[in-house]
Image (cartoon, rainbow, N blue to C red; front, side, top):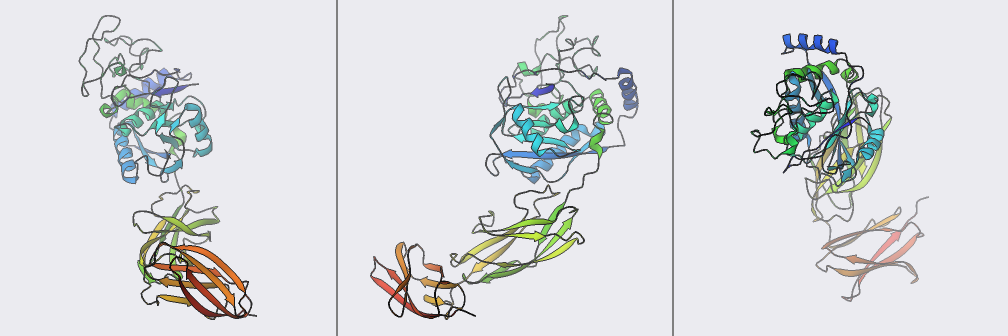
Length: 485
C-alpha cells in the first residue's frame, strides 16, 4: 500500500506519520538532472498545460460542507498560483459533484468510493468532513504517480482546514512526485546540504526539515533549537507547501520542486492532459411570473439548450414548489424529456398540475433538469429555472363546488372562512338518500381546497355535504354527474 498520509490539526499541527514510503523504481536521475537544468534556464515557462480535475464533495446533509461555486473557484485559483511555475494549471472538468455520504472515511472507504465515482483522465479529488487514518486524526492522502494504475489514483482530504488550498496543493504535490520536506525513509537530510540528493526529499533547494508537525509554530516563522545529527541548527521553511506547517502557512514550491512536478507531469501524469468535454443542460424561459387560482393548471414553455449531449437519449425534469425564493421546497411533479441528438436547443411545453391545497400567497416554482445529477455536467447551476407564481382566489365565492355538472372524474370543493383547525366531514348522497362517499378531513386554514374522486358515480343528481361536527354547521351543494360516452 503506497500512499502518503498528511495530517494537520487546526490548533496544533503535531500529527501522525506516513504509513509507507515508496521510491520511484524507474526514476532516471540523469533524465531529471537534464530536465532540471533545462527547467532552471527557462524558469518562467511560457508553456502551461491545463489539467482536468473532477471534484467530489461528500456531504452528510445538503450544504453542510459550506462549499459553493464561488469558494471552489477561489480554491482552484489559489492552487494554480502555487503551481504556475511548474507549467501546470488545474481546471474543473464539469461542475463539482455533490455526493451524499458519511461523516468520516477511512482509506478503504475512499477507495470504494473512487471505484464507483472515478472519472477517467482527470484528477479525482474527494473532499470529506473527516478522514480517519490508522494513526487517528484528520487529514488526507494522495498516491505517488508511480503507484497503482491511473484509475486507482485519487486525492482525499477534509474540507475543515483553515486553508483548503494549501492542503490541496500539498496533496497534489504528492501526486506529482514530491516528498515531504522532512522525509527520513531514505536518510536524514543534513542542514549543510551535503546529502541533499540522497536523503530527505532528495532536492537541494529545500532546507533540511526536522518535521514542523512536531511543534506548535508561532505564526508562520520558526526559531528554535532543533539540531541535525551533526549538531547544526535546523532552519526549515514553514511556507513550503510540502512541509507539515499549519495549512495557512503553506504558500510556495521551490524551483526544484516545480521542476520535479513538471518532470512527472510530462511522464507518468501525461494522461491528464486530454481535453475535457462534458455535457450541459441549460434551461430558461421567457416567463418571470404568473398569477393563477388554486384550481388552475399552469401551461408553461421553456427552452432547453444542449451542449455535448452525445449518447444521452432522455433526461428527467422535476418541478419544485416553495414559499421561499432561496429554497427548492418540495417536489410535486416529475417528467422525462426525450433528447433530440440532432438539435442544440429544444422547446419544452409543460402542463403543470399546480397543488390545489396552496391558498392565496406567493410561491416559487422551479424546473430542474437532471435533478439527481446522474449526468456529470459542465455547470449545474444553470439546469434550473424559477418562476414566481401568485395564487389569487379573491374572485372565488366563499363556498363553491365545481365543475357542475361534473364531466370527468374529479369534483373540486372550495371553502373560505375563519373556522380553522376543525374537523370537516364530506359526504355525497344520491337523490334516494344512499351514501356514496364519506371522509373526515381536517381544515386548518382560511382557504380550503379539496379534490374528490367521483369516477365511480353513475349519471344523476347528487348532494355533497360539508359538515363541521364541532360547530354544528353544514353546507349542502347539488351537483349533476354526467359520464361521457
